[in-house]
Image (cartoon, rainbow over all chains, first blue to last red; front, side, top):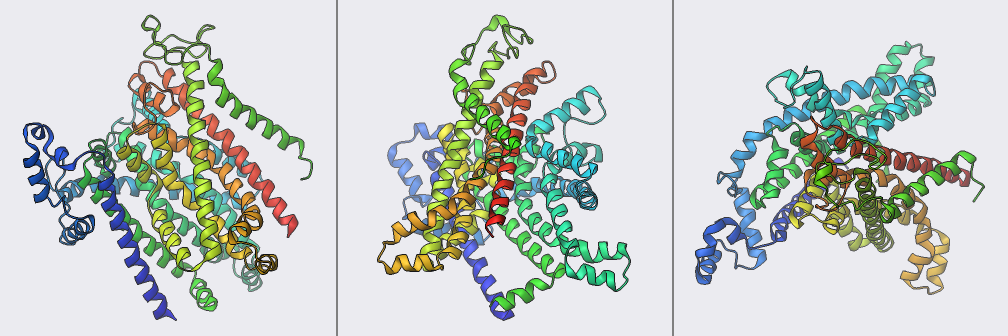
Length: 316
Length: 272
């Protein structure tokens, strides 16, 4: 059984990467205008039609689209993503330079998410329908409706302009510079986690194994942290896998507000200037990152809740 | 349907009148929302200009209302198109199964992996701004939810006996799908759509804020934020007004959405 499952996931992974590469390739075809003219810039105006056509030949742009795709895929496997049309440097280098900022921003946001939503979710479930629950519910409604770009601007105005305690421009080198961006990015994700955690804990509390644990005389604290939380955390982890992608998207907006030179800013610039190679590489990178993180989350769920494997086997 | 509770009736009235205000308010604005008047830059709140004027002397109140029209029109179109595409593909995929199902589901899986914001930004960036391109770019990241939900309902529903008997009666596939299966999907999918409105409004606003969405001189809330950004430290008010508007609208939509969801859940439980 297990072997077949593994084979199936490998096949799915291959299909996924195939589709991913097709999407990334097609993105370039969607860009309006002539890629040769885009690459040459103003120099294209002085060239004759024949010269342009020759150039197009040398880039392989006159080949049938399938051959272009295969060639492109081959160069990707050799690690050649092309050169950025803006700076003229290899795309890989540019991405390598900026990815650190985005990763630390995302990590900071994840810490904010965990610090805010786990305690609040637990507290809400513990005093269900109480005053605290209602207050947190209000907090959730507030931050679901809050556009995070506006939140960022207001935080800048408040903390950087009026109170002058934190810098308006984010930087990953200091903790103070990280505080506002990470909070802006992280807090908009908290409502869904608080709600999910609250719901799951309430449901788990009713389950039989909790009663059985109580009957065995295990202390309430132990039951809560080792039995209930463990069970209630599986869906949270799944949601986390989905959020990782959105985190990268949100990072784009956050980086723009706090003028941080991260992957998001890089991609925004690339999109504005139709820098196709950069967009391609960015899309591929995001897709692969998310695929890997989803696989990790899946494995994490299995560790937390071994019953998933058993249920899966029973279904077959 | 049972008589609604008084509270719910109030919610529905508030929601619908808000929608109507946003959709038709455009035709009753006190000023032309795009009319610039350099003599009256950054006016504060007054009886003439309810919410003051912006950096080009345009009446903010009129622009907010006109922007509301753009936001709501765009968001409703996004939901409508994703709903139709998603449900249609979901019906086909769930009803026929086999290879078609496999292909559609792999498409859905791949689309789901990509973060919505990034794809919306890239698609609208490549297509260029403008209302319809924004709509297309957000539909790209919305359709598959509806597809998944409707497919899962159809897969469960098509095994039932009445579908069998319809088949035996020689009913055509498409009429089985439309007459028997579609009604089952509607209530679930409609709830999903109502819950989604708030999120789509936010996405439209953030696209416009980044400059990939609705283009000037049209008024749109996110675009107004983008324009007002540079005057934030000197005239914070032209930043706060559109922000509060987005916040309030999304709040109203979300509140109504979650209420509808609760009502449908209760109904479903009763049926069980």
